[in-house]
Length: 181
Image (tube, rainbow, N blue to C red; front, side):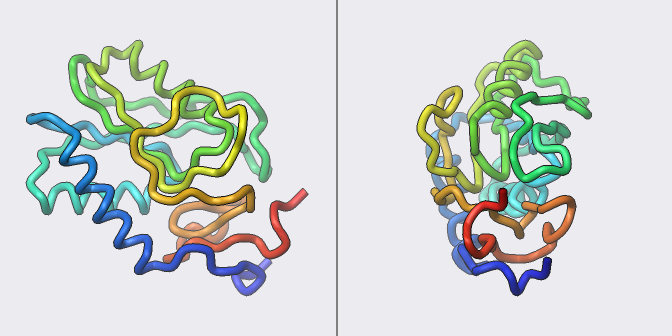
C-alpha cells in the first residue's frame, strides 16, 4: 500500500496550528512547577516532540518520559487487551502528569495507563490526544485536551502507522474507502 491510496485528512499546517493552540490551553489550565510529559509510544512521538517544544518555548518547565504499550500488535483493530511493554523510569510521585497519546479509539489504553500512573503516585493526571475517534460506549473519561475529532476511518501519518509503515508522513491521511476489514 502506498500513501497515494490515502486521502489527506489533516494537513501539516493545520496540525502545527492545533499544537500551538493545545499548548496555550494546557498553559491556561495548569499550575506552577514542572509538568511531566509521558508519551505513549510509538504513535505519539511526533506529537509529543512538537507539543513539548511549544510548551518549552512558552516557558513551561518539563520532565519527559515514555511508555510503550500495545493493544493493536500488527493488526488494524484493538485486541481488547493492553500490555505495558516498557514502563516509565521517571519518579512521578506527587507530580502533575500530562499523558500524551496519538489517538483515542476505545479508551481502553488510556484508562489502563491512567490507572497505572495513579498507582505510581501521580498527583494529577491530564490526558492530551492528537485524535479522538467518534465512538459511542467509549471506556473511561474523555481527555482534557483533544487535537482533532475524526470519524472511524483508519489513519496514518504524523506518528500513526499501519504495521510500522507511514509514521514519517508529516500530515494525517485516511485510508480511502474507510477502515480496513
